[in-house]
Amino acid sequence: MNKMTKRMRFRFSHWRSLGFLCFVSVGVLACAEQRNVCLLPLASEEPGRPTSSPFYPDALYGVEDVGWSAYMRVWQEHQKDPSNLDVRRFLGLPTEEPFVFQAKRGRSSPRWLEWRPGTFAQVDTSHFTIFSTADELTSRRVAEDLEHCYWVWTQLFFPLWEGSAQVTTAFADWDPDQSLVEFLATRRPRLSIRRQMQVVLLKDKEQYRKTLAAEGNAIEQSTGFYSDSLRTIFLYGIDDDAVETRRHELTHQLFREATRSSLGQAMPGEQSDFWLVEGIAGYMESMKIGERQATIGGWDASRLQYARYRVLVGQDLMLPDELMRDGLQQAQRRDDLARWYSHSIANVHALMDGGDVTIRRWLYHRLSSLYRSRSPLAPLANQDSIESQLMQSWGRGLQQYLYLDDAKLEGSPPSTPLRVLCLSGCEITEDTLCLVPASSGMTWLDLAGLPVGNAAVQRLVPDPSSLEQLTLEVTKVDDGMGAWLQKASGLRELDMSWTKVGDSFLQELSGFQDLSVLWMTGTRLTDQSIDAILRLPKLESLDVQRTQISEAGLERIRKARPSLQVNPLELRSP
Image 1: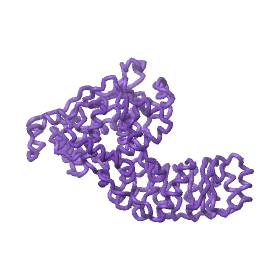
Image 2: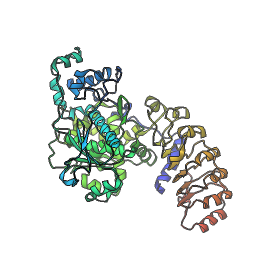
Image 3: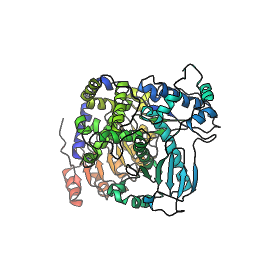
């Protein structure tokens, strides 16, 4: 954490405690946030279950599109009776299984891979050809996820999907009051695709690195990459980060290859608007796959936690002109690339899920233009007026979208445990926090300023062994947290500022070998904690202002650890 960020956090917490913080209702983004609900292919023997949601993509888009409405009705009929062959035939689903999986010994890979026959497997699904050196289980899991994501994408971005014209034609004579199942049984239409999309699945990081060595050093930090020139995704790994990356890169591929795009050899966002290319792919990282349906969006998306910290705590706002002007090359040369990505993705979340139908239509039109897709989108009335209003409310709208209170959390609680969670800058009570599922795999938790105590934190993270960063500044926790925190031996940054912890708490941290940043501002530490501080071998930054550690104690710390930054910020009274 840099000095400016920490200072901003202190000021923000102070204003908030005085009740001066408010968020203004700002026109187009003032509506309630919603997640998108999409439906998944099922095995024929799955029990049928009627399903209805006000949050299907066509409803959230706010139009009476016969094709889109019919398409969502087909999926609802599939959920009601997964064994219905006419529905399965229309969607191209196999007779019994939820998706096609055909694996065979690879004989011919793309020439540029230079793989010898028999050293890889070729896996074919309905929409993908996967050249894999991974094991069969990994190949199957990746193939299933790709198929799920494909179907979700077709529902969410139906107007841009190349198959939308087939659906609209197939249902041109359908009366919505007529049984859709009977219509399919009589007409027997079936979706078709132009070709399967190509995926290369590598067995490990080393093979991934060697295969993509020509792409430069950035590949070292990635687990997936989509090549526009080769029309191929390169992947490895199946952990949570790899899954999010896979969905990110697949989104690039789908907008490029599953739309009627006329880009040719050009790159999307080459001259400007590259923010939307990366923003929409980052938005799709939020996808959560359940047994029968998937959700996309929501305040608990991993990427939004970092954006929430930047915007609400750091008061960092990126105006539209700065965000949108960069093309691909200009964006990649930015010194603040992580910040640019964070704002790109957060703003797409706000546009997709902010609850305003007109803004969502505007975004779809912008995507269609970006990818030069020949889509059946109806013209957008008053486009100039819509854009003007959107630009004027841009920063304030994002603040409002990222801000979370009890009502917002109660209306949209997370369905699965979270890996990262930042609620700093929000107004959440301890009772409402109980709606967030317990997670033993959390790596970053920031509850700064919330009125929560020991029990609430320990319930949320019953096993803190995965924690790498923890912020409990200005909360109600005390020394009773010490025994729990002992299990977080991999912790790298800890902020307990302005809490009731003291010397006994710090004694519990003596075995922390990786702790590099420790904020204990305004706590009850005394000189008795100096030995415990000096036993932290990797400590680089320490703040103990407004504690009872004496000047002599500070001098002892500085002499024992000359490279340690002690009290790096000048703490001023508000």
